[in-house]
Image (cartoon, rainbow, N blue to C red):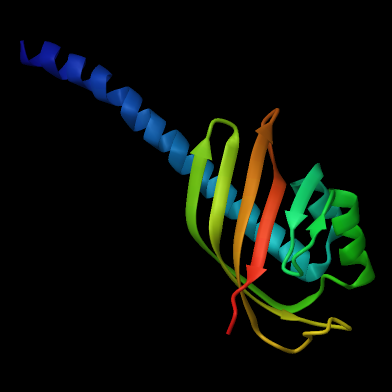
Length: 149
């Protein structure tokens, strides 16, 4: 009787445990992709950014304008408009909704080059939205704003 109870309970609890493992694995993957994306931005690695950013990606940027797609964002990286001497990111929350991962947190950046705020430390809040398509995650939308001092 005890063996039957253990077998039934094991089956009953196995699915929730497996589901938790899948969520944990997806969260770890998104954290790795966030770090890969952060490094690619600071290195101006447009090849990696092209892989991680969806062609239709849209950004509500810290300059309070909208950058409409990946091509426009990559042009800003190539031109040096998006360039940082320092770029740190702290993920505070990740939530999943079907094929979407919503990542929120804080960033500290130090713009470089001919940026009007070059050399200053800026604190920002951010949201990145990732979508999984055919087993591949890409950023489809981003919002970042500078936190007033």
